[in-house]
Each structure stands twice: as structure tokens, then as C-alpha cells.
Amino acid sequence: MPELPEVETVRTGLARSWIGKRIDGVDLRRENLRFPFPEGLSERLTGRTVKDIRRRAKYLLIDLDNGDVLLSHLGMSGKWTLDASDCEGKHDHVVILFDDGSMSVYNDPRRFGVLDIFSGTSHKLLDHLGPEPLEEWTGKDLYEKLQKRKSAVKISILDQKVVVGVGNIYACEALNRAKISPTRVSNKVKKKECDVLVAEIKEILAEAIRVGGSSLRDFAGVDGTLGYFIHQFKVYDKEGKDCDCGGVIERLVQGGRSTFWCRSCQK
Image (cartoon, rainbow, N blue to C red; front, side, top):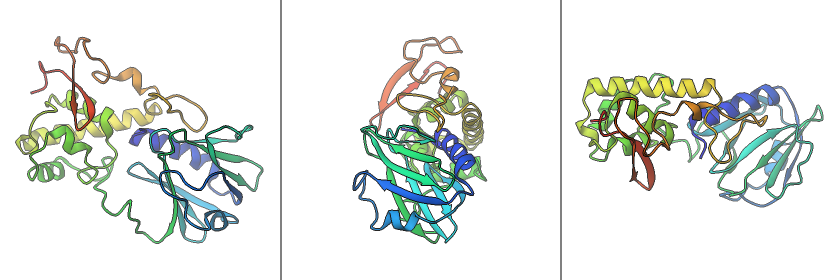
């Protein structure tokens, strides 16, 4: 699933292409993705001009000139492409036509993505979300959240109520850099360790955004460019390889997801 850096990469690409353009038509080629499309979606979008594109957690929020907001989540395998000359693929489910003759296509083989439209500032998929990691989120904030939790710290930082968008890959990498075991009970993580972990999460996410995210399986940017942070992984998907500390990277399963870590340096 695309994580925060990948979604931010998509947001940047769409913003360069979409902002200021008027939507002249929308072709919905099925009735649903993960959820049914809202009634009248095509009509609400047609004639509207894109004013801005924001990101909240792993959601794209496209602001329209009448105050409506188009919400898009990429799910497991969704992607937006720009200026697609061929939009007749089996998994091309949504086509947006713009007033300058360009088009964008939403392709999603697994159909776990979401497309919705709303007005105002509240949406059921957004209202429960925790803080953005790249904004004013501190070690103190994380420490206070962890004090109430007895789950493993890796599980806690994947919880969208604790912090949004970190995701499995970046959680593994940040815990390794912070030298914290992913199995450590959350309320046993010290305040100074939370300061270090938050700093590492911020730095890793920023690094990944700079190189276009991590291309695993289906992910690519809107122009087809692959993300290169995969080449900077220290532990993720490196079971049996040597850690920088001289130990050996191991794999375990937490919450149904693979965790990669080194027991020699992560305590």
C-alpha cells in the first residue's frame, strides 16, 4: 500500500497538472471501488475548477472552486496517471477530462481505493485521524500517547490515531535508526527515546519524499517515475542480511505485517 511519501509524491504531481484547470467531463466505468461512488459524482465534478490539492494522512483532498472536496485514497494498488493516450485498460476505472484537452486516469487492479466528494471540513474517514508526522508533532506528543498503550511500539506507530501515514516500511526503518526494538511494550519507551524516534520518522519521511517514495510492487508516480527510497532501506525486506552494526536482520510478524529488525542493536 502506498504510504505517506508515495501519496505526497502523487499529490505533488497532480498539483502541477490539475490546479487551475476546469473539469469538462468524468467517465466512471464502474459503480464502485472499495465503496460505491456517491450519487451524482460526475455531475458534481463537471464544470468545476481545481483550486488546490492537499494531503491528509494517505488521503488526497482535491479542493474545487465551489467548496466541494474530492477525496481519493489509492488503496493497495491504485494510481493516477497524467495525459494518458490510452485509457482503455481493464483496470482504468475513472477518467477525468480537462478543459485544455488533457486527461487523467485512475487505475486500480484490486479496487481497494476510495473516491468520494464532500463539502465542509468533516468526513468520516478523516475525523478520527491523529497528527501529521511532518508538522508540529513532537517526542512529547508520542510519549504521552504511548503511556496508555501496552501493545508493541511498532503496532502503536502504525495506529492512525497515534500518528498518520508512517506505514510499515518507514516504521521498520525508523525503529532501526532509533535503535528501539519493534517488540518493546509501548509504555516502556522512554521520553528521550520518543524524541529520537520522532526525529528519525520525520527525517526518513522527508528523505523518501525527496526521492519519490519507495516503489514496491505497483507504485509509481503520476508520470510513471519510480520511487528510489527502496535503495536506501537498512532493514526492510533484508531478512538474513547484515545490519550496519554487524548483527543479522531478522523478520517477524506483528499485526499481520512483516517487521524487519536487528536484535543486536535494537533493544
